[in-house]
Length: 110
Length: 114
Image (cartoon, rainbow over all chains, first blue to last red; front, side, top):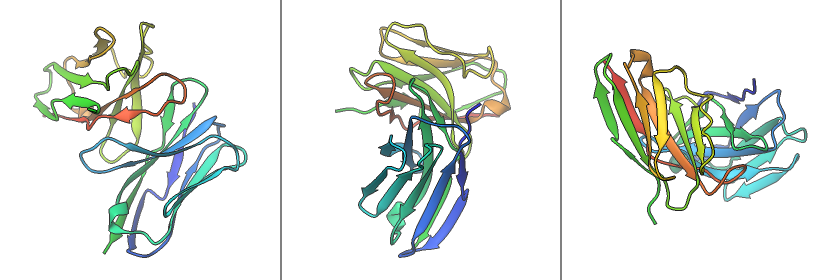
């Protein structure tokens, strides 16, 4: 059974601080996606990484896929209150299925 | 264009009653997924439809759960004889196809079984 573990489960930080969220598995994935979900809404895709060692940047967000394609990290620089939400990683294989992690709930205090 | 829509947005039902949840995918999307999300947790895969192929029902937790997709578009998730542990947010997503296409999620239906 493929599992994705995210850490930390909850993070409360002050505006302007940096943070990193981790997504780990013992399984290899062909792709890794990161989503952000706000209360009352469905998850929204932020990025997809497909190559081991790949790094993608989206403004203040940096995503990295591990060399072995078993883990990933999301780093946010100078967090803002608008970054508040539930961050979910999801691993994909060559089929249609995505395996979702349990999520990291981020609260950025003004 | 319109995104994925789901109805109702909230549903409160008594234990033992049946409920139907509806999903309208993005027009032209051939793949449709149902997920379940417990409070603040990750998503649990329930069922997948792709075009005219037989659906993948491997994630349905019990035979009280069923889903259909009519005309390759609208989908209905039915839960019979609801139990309190069925309380969750039920999310629907659609994508252009299978295997690596971005999934677009609806806002979900929050189901509360009393």
